[in-house]
Length: 380
Image (cartoon, rainbow, N blue to C red; front, top):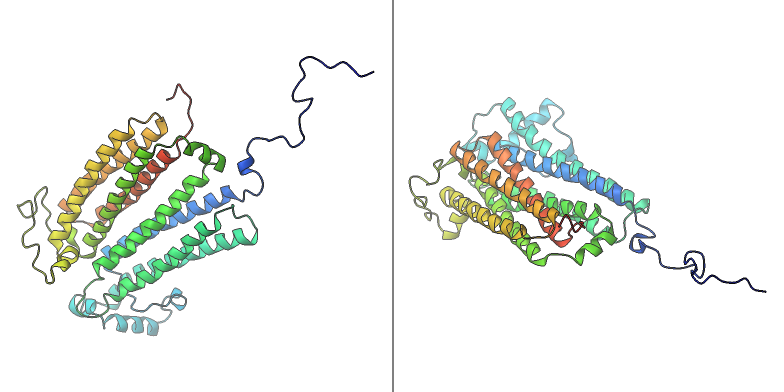
């Protein structure tokens, strides 16, 4: 005789299929080494930040043209003998920067600028090695997270392109009457560095949360706020490029009065170069004027974006834009002080680092709008 069944049976004990759905299926199976990849990307991020700082100091010390050849492999070794140093110095003495600006420079003075540029290039090689070691290690050990092979390969490809653009930039100052590299090539070089930095930061943000969490967060995304974050990022990137133009022609060391320029709102004789388009890249007054105006526009846009973000129901999203506005305000003050004091290297490099922090915080604010962090009703 069959045993009597209870009117209310425990679902966990009776009638449950063996293959009943369980939570976390999105992240089940081969997840890859997401945590290790994130740490590796953080190391790359730190190295790229240092690379940007070293690149800025290389420009501020007029060291960028001290190495006149592009030898990606053999150039890793510095001059090892007195004869090697004489050869490098002889090559430098043939370019316009030496003949028109540094004629009579001693070998000891040349070594100072040479080591700056050699260190800059060496750091680039080291970043490439760190990327290759991590990427190949993930492939060999089969720990690559699903869907991340192409993204992480893109970082390496952009790094290789950055090296080629770096030489394209240096080559512009090795002939003719150029005393420095072409400013628009410098802007291209710095702009790509910030693109790489932004991609790494975005990947770190994504890997910091599980895929199931991101998919759920997308349902609550605040598209309008993400749009404001994108607009703010676009103007910030333009301002970074204009900052590179300012650095490229030493425009920050002229017109040190503020808020006027040489006593007027507009700099004197802004279109004296021919053809006219050259003034937007090479006239120190016009380039600094554009940098100032873009800075004001960025600050005003930041205020509007902050006002929009403060309406978000998510506390973490609101705080992300609070951080942006705080750094943006500090960056404006730093920019004004840098101009007033004639762009000394220590202020200029702090101002550049501020641009790095601002860039990453803007990206984070947009990420928080696209993928809001879950919070309790009370917190909302």
